[in-house]
Length: 361
Picture 1 (cartoon, helix red, strand yellow):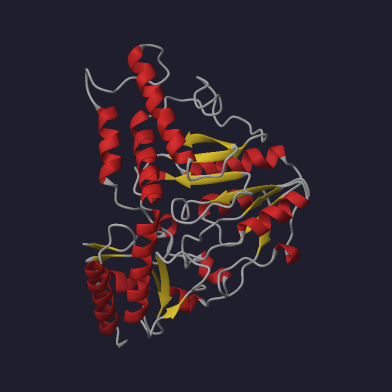
Picture 2 (cartoon, one colour; picture 1 turned 90 degrees about the vertical axis):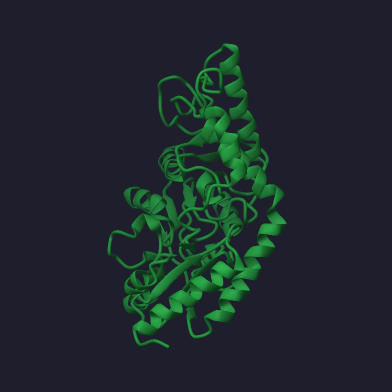
């Protein structure tokens, strides 16, 4: 299998696995509850805090990291609690991930449109609530476009509103804007384990606790914390920081290779500003769903993994003004640290061969 679906999830880094194994042990090893006050519990608690610092190192200064079960939980927490803290109204991008979008719908949020390149319109021309909350993702998960988060943060702050940034696809790859007030991230998008994410909250912002019970996670999210998941997340974050330049250069090489091999395909979304580990393209006459079936040895997608079973076309592409027919002719390819040039070349050739079976040369 050639894996080209890095937006859905990424392979677990060996370093992250090694960090986790210590805390998945049996008797005599690191299995203690980090809330326990004995020596083993304190050691587990220390491991959680080391991981917290590693995760925080890739985020702005002046805030706190709260571990969650993933970015979906972090976004739900931020949106519903943030809307209570700032009751003046909510606004969010039309191309947000479903984890935000469905919350925004429940909150009757104003919709911030995007243009045909998949970039948010200027905050000067869209509804920004007074004493409310604005949700703006950093890197779109379907087309990779980088949104003007700093501009929206400035516009929100001018109206005494908060800015929530879904940084899931950008964390560890793209600089996080300093001006954000709430930031949601996920471990498994940066070669960490599934089942853990985090919400970063700027100092001075008070959210309601997410869960009650044992006052874990600084009193904000009760429930026993997993040292293994935290350690894996921390190790992945530390590795992302260490390999930032090498990973970025590798992604750019793969992007250039893909663009050279797919000259007949149309790029969905702007080429810049964009994270170049995400390539969303379309080809007239291609049925994306059939393409996936015929090129079954290549793992790629039609859009968000969270909506892949719905049968609906991408809401992101439709929000960009792309027709339903063109959206169904679109595919998303994602690569990163562990993708080799040979794998990408072989994968793209397999996709092109599958397109020929549909009469598209």
